[in-house]
Length: 528
Image 1 (cartoon, rainbow, N blue to C red):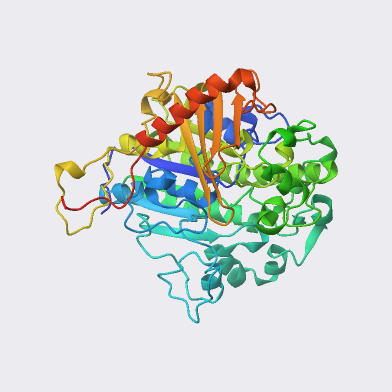
Image 2: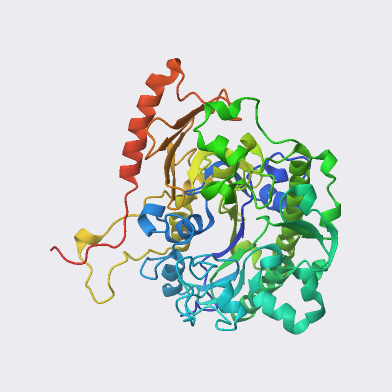
C-alpha cells in the first residue's frame, strides 16, 4: 500500500557505509580525509559523538538496525547466520503502514557464501537470495519482494573487485569492456605488496563505479517519489570502505601514504591483553588466520599500514561524493524539507590500532564506535552535537516514532495476539535527544560478539566513564579502560589492584544490562 499524494508523514533517507570508523570523517575531527558532503550534512543536522554498535560484524549489526533487537534477540549472533523471515522488521512495519520501502546497495541480511558445510547440486533462489554463486550462475537476478520489509530493491553484494548483484549484471550488459577493470584485471597501480592486503588503484572510471551506480539508482527512486507522491523509507547502503582496499581516480590519487598517521598503539600493549591478541598479531595461524589479514606477513609494517590508511581514505571520499549526488537530488526535487536523513555505519575497522587489522573479537573503539548523523529541517537544530551514549538498537525505535509506526511482535500470523505477548523493543527512541529536548537517553551500552569458529563469547559494557569487556569461556580474560583518563584505550586495568572494586561494580551492571535487553525470538503463541 502506498501513501497518498497528500501524505504529510516524513520521508526517511538512510545512508549506510560498510566498516567505516567513526573518526574517518571531517565532522568527527579528522583533518586529512575529504568528506565535504557528510560534513555538510553534519552542519545541517546533529552529530552523535558517542554512538556504539550492537555487534562489530556486518550481519548482526545490520539485522539489529532493521529489527531493533539485540543479536541475541534476532538470532544473527555472528556473520553466516541469515536473518529469519519471521523476525519483525521496521521496514515491514513501515510498508504495512503505507510507506514505500526501498533498498539500494548492500543489505547482507543473508550470507554471501552458499555454505561451508556442503555445496548443493542446485541452488534454490529462496534459500540463497544474496549468494554470490547464485547471482553469478544467474539463479538469482533480483531479491524477492518484499524482502524483510523492503517492497523493492536494487541489490549490490560483495566488496571492491568482488562485487556482484544487479550492478555487476548492469556493467556486464552495458559496459562489458569495463568488467576487467572492475575485477582488477586492469589496474592503474597495484598496492597489494605495499599494503600486505589486496589493494590497487582502480582503472574503472568513477562514473561507472558501484558507488555512483548506487547513488544514481537512489536518485531514480527519489525522482519517482517526487512524481508519484507517498511517504518513503529508502535504505542506501554502500560496500565501502570495507577491504579489499580499492578506489578509482581521482580519489586514489588524493592521499599520499607518507602523510598518513600511524595507528593508536603502545609498546608492550599486547602483553596486557588476552593472549589471543598476541596469537593474531604474531602468528595468524589456524582459525585466527583470517583475522590477521589476507596476505603474509601477518605482522603489518608501518609502511603497509600507511598505504592501507591512504586507500581507505580514498574509498571514504569516493563514497562521500556519491552521497553528495543523492543529497543534491533531494534538494533539487524539493523533497529535503520533509525528508529525515540519517547517516550511519554497521561497525568500524581496527586498521592497525592496538597492532590489529580488520575486525573480529576486538572490542576497541576503532571497531565499536560508529558515526551517526541526523538531519531534519526545522526540528533538529543545525550544527549541533550530542555526547550522550547511544546504541545501535536505538535506531529502530527512533524510526518508528518519527514515522508513527509500531513493529509487530513476531507471532505466528494465524495466532491471535494476546496482552501478555506484547513487548517493547530494548532500544530507546532518540527523538528527544536529536531535537535537543533531552541530554541523554541511556547511561550504558552493551555490545555482543559470539564467534562460533573462534570459540569466543564477548560482552562489553560502555558507560560514560568506563568500558568493560568479559569473555564467557575465559573468566581470567578481560579488558577495563578508563574512558575519561585513557580515551585511546592503551592501559588495560583488568588486573590492576586499584581497579578491582570498579571492575566488580561494572560486572554487576553488565549482568543487569544484559537482562534488561532480553527480547528473544520466537515469541510464545499460547499459554502452554
